[in-house]
Image (cartoon, rainbow, N blue to C red; front, side, top):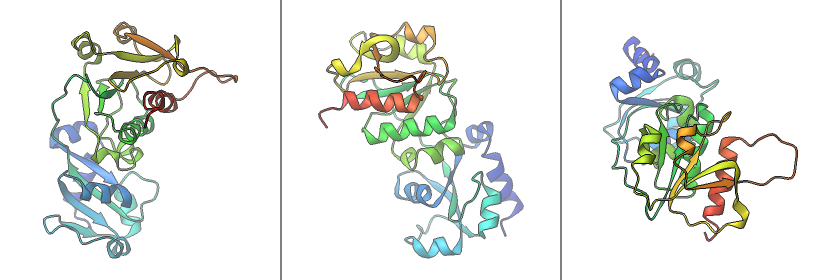
Length: 247
């Protein structure tokens, strides 16, 4: 049985204020926990089923663990069902955020859906981006639903939270700032180099006016059907693929 103190700790980490205060976050699901253990992030504790424990390499000696039933594991976390593992990990130290003069950064403005946020972090991992800059009005990148949606990419992709208009304003003028916009240039007719910042806005309204004002080029994704718009993660995937045609 998991102690009351540990249950309280896990419960606290479902809230942003405690994640920030304690410097910890939750990782749920067997694959994500394996990604955590294989990374440089510090694991504080693992809760896992006995069956899952027989299928993975031995845990590092420094990592305490608890064997729990599937029912207890599910009640402990946020997933509808969890038959494998849950871990408590330390938030990573933030690396220096350097101007992206030779690499591409993904910047997110008011992306409030944790699933979209996690998928965008996963896209950054897939294309080998420098990292993801989030406005302070985005979903928390360390919320359990966001971490789960990254499918393990949380362990590899640096994430910074900034006042986005101010950060964009302070970039060197030579750094390109791209953004999706209905009145932009047809992305399929451009030759784009993966350097600078690609800015994606909220699911409903796109980037704020003060963010749009920072763009040096607006990009348009042409379509032939009747859909009103594209999901922000799908739009980002299309644009990123155009930046990386030479891969």
